[in-house]
Amino acid sequence: MKNTILSLVICTTSLLSFGQTTSVPTARLGDLKGEGPWTRSDILVQEFLNVKSEPADAYKVVSFKLYIKLSNGIEKIAFAQGNALTPEMETMLNFIEEGSTVMFEKIIAKRTGGSDETILLAPVTYKLTEKPKPVAKDLEVLKDCKIMLGNIDFTKEFTLEELWKQDKIKVVCLDGVTYPVVSFNVIAAYKVAPPAMCTFKGNTIHETGLKMIKSMKSGDRLLFERIIVEVVENGETVQKTVPPLVVTLP
Image (tube, rainbow, N blue to C red; front, side, top):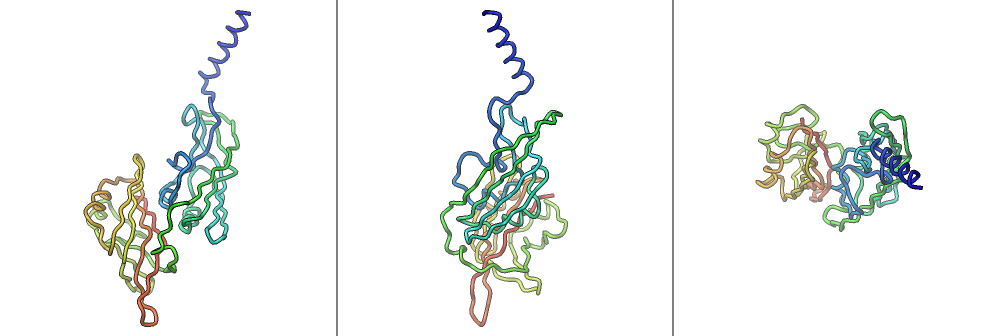
């Protein structure tokens, strides 16, 4: 009997030493932990679908499906190979708002360390439950325009040094018209720290926001969102919102 117990102990120890997981691996979006509540900004600053396991990094996502149901009932679907959100997925996520549901399913993960073992992870769902902001929620979206910071056109190359010198946001449409900015949010999505956000009235990034941007490094992501502008239509000034912009710093 003693020999049997000893054999079981040796067997269990051997399994653990060879990197066997001690809990069921689960998927999660970026660094989001727990059950929320989640805001639009929480979702938009993430880049990867990760696997939580014991030991850590025992698995890596190799493919998955993204399903989005917007608050107006519209559904969107996209597929990805690897663990990174695709440009198509990032564009889809730009439309989410309070009441939207973001679900990752058909998640295939592969064991790291050269193993060919793959597993199907349980779906993970994020429901946006932040309190509505009526000022921006029901505004019409202004299309065919681009967001600039000072003289930086984010469709072209720029340097961090150039970025740090800018403090005014501009919304320029394809016809060359620049619309006055009423308010906007700036989010710094750091690679090695939790994201930070500042909200501004008017078109100017003030001292706190400038310090936040200057603390960012290459590979961090800068997000401009909830941008509200004034547009003159039929002799009346109305407010509209602009699709968010996510920029990966050079």
